[in-house]
Image 1 (cartoon, rainbow, N blue to C red):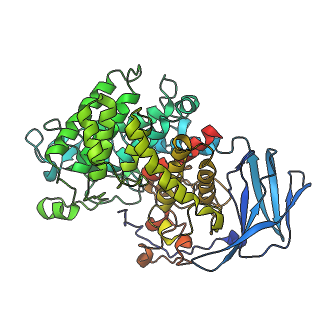
Image 2 (cartoon, rainbow, N blue to C red):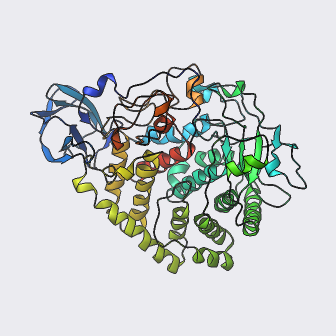
Image 3 (cartoon, one colour):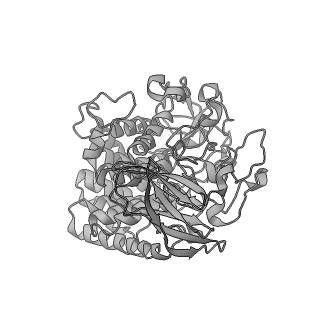
Length: 569
């Protein structure tokens, strides 16, 4: 699925860092004053665990509450609960000569919440990134995308092959510089789903973006920058939606302003059309009556219905890149985002159009393809976004059915925590790890738990959502806070062209990396992983696209989880 282009000069790398000998695993961003606080001692049975305050005064002597054994490596872990510490401050955990600085705060996630969204601004395509807003991560304009060609696979009577169109705005998708409808739609869909739950929080959350002084919540302004690009990806001839805007091959590790490959819009697909229809319908509701974007709601709803109609006439128009390349030139070798089953896309699109228009035929269409089981929303399985939407729809029959599906998932997740290695509902199964697992197997499922806490049973699932975040932020086997720029040990070399080529030593902050991936698809390129264990198969190396890439959909899951938790704690 992801990108396999590496540096021309690829050096072998090791997963071991200088501080890997420290066996204390904890949330490196911070613990809430009134919530559970747990840390893990990895492999070494502690003789003495002492907690001291900022003045070095002893506050508590701690003991493990239980032990756990890794199902992957047999390593023993010791679970230590210090929840009785509720006063805000900086504390030092002292374990047999080892130390870790722990923060307890009323709002420990505020900076991370802002950074998780701010990262989208710094990944904007087609504009200069302002030094007054981005500091040392400012850069000149790149990829204006006003000279984009129609690829032969995307030709139509009004837009023949080779015709030049403008398709500006949008976010760079991941470590590369292309823009993909399927992933953009999913990303925005998840962000808007959470926005609808805590709109007051986002109305008060101020970001450093160019639109910060208007009347629209900054999150919606940032989302609009990508929505404006998506609207340019619809063929006015028939309402179909191009699958992606891309170069034939991935660019090298250079800055956007130094890229010179021709960019194309390529083949329309049924999944792109349906994802587009869903998110445009959803956004049309939330931007209705906007004074900053007058008339945009009507434009988006009209575009959504046209895309849905096109999809209905082209149900088998799946994007298959290899097949396309056999028929058309130039060949395209960038991210495919292929999907051979659109049932979940039909459900999400019909759901959002039903809510936006009140059309009974859309509700009926959604009911016909409603899933029998809740699936955590990811770019290739979006039915969960439809479930989230119906929960707030006021349609009793649909609400009750969606609650039941979500409850089954959430209750099953909670069963995993009591015996887990790192006090998390996720992380003790091999299937919890793989490409993008920190988003798709930790953050996104935790967001589902937050929806369950909101709509199924309050105060039952919130704690385990927070526990999953603790895992991502450092309470894990390798002791990484897996978000750039945060924690004492975080990724320094993400697989991202912007962070690699900008001449700045630090990576862009607020980016969630993919995480441990036992597939190690990049291993044959000269990289060496320190472990083959599912939960330890990670490398902080720019060349490790399998474990250290970033992506907008993954950051959306981080943003959704952190912002919601920050809002309700």
